[in-house]
Length: 215
Length: 124
Ligand SMILES: [Zn+2]
Image 1 (cartoon, rainbow over the protein chains, first blue to last red):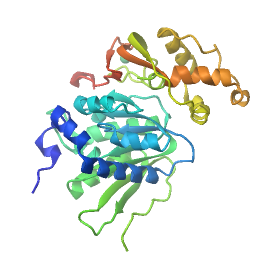
Image 2: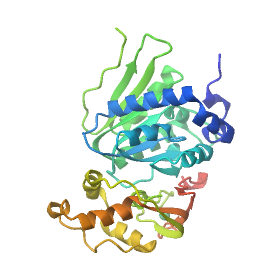
Image 3: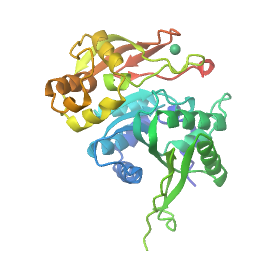
């Protein structure tokens, strides 16, 4: 069985220059990322106008490019300087910030109309350093994310939770910070196509979108 | 880093939460023309800290914005203002330099247009 990347090294080391370049050049990886990003945007259920969005764990900017295609203006954050370097090379339209999501967001209150995050949240369940306590980092992240979202805005996290326990920890932390929502699972019966999206509403709960299925 | 992004950034160092705005020390500025998007401007203008945006513009040497924000009703027809807003907000990039929190002195470097908001372990 292939090792999960988050078990090999922390993200800032795993996505080193070589890995970042590989990630940025693999057509298959790019296609998967773009599809997941487009689905995340669909789940955001935004009003029909250009919005101001946050992309947490934006990496080399593949998801951001999809946001741009939809006409939105975005800010991305990532802890891998190598991945951000690739994003700069690719001349993505959004602005980039070098930061650790587990230290919390660093924006004024009530700014972003929505947030997407593709394959990043599960990294927070790891304790990469002695000082890292996953629960504290998750809460710090969710609390500060909640604050910088416009009231009622939605955040969509595509993630690969490792265990049901880590999924539960993530959800509990999010709820404690005021989010409501739940998990949307696309193609739950297919091992290959199955995708999980944590759908969180800041404030007023909305109806949870339905997952996609083949039949 | 666009001035739009700067207009949202706060100092998050332990003990100095939410300090805004961060002062810009600009070493390299870039102007890059992007497509004028009136719909986005009219939407995002409600979220802006306008005096701080104008101040940031002045800090990097662009004094195009009027002292006070035009009334929302007349803004849509005020193309001169919207064009200046677009230029300051979206087309002006700080490429190299730093952001300084004037309250606690924390310096956040900007390299290749990317602000480094990473805190040391004892600052979290
Ligand atoms: Zn400060």
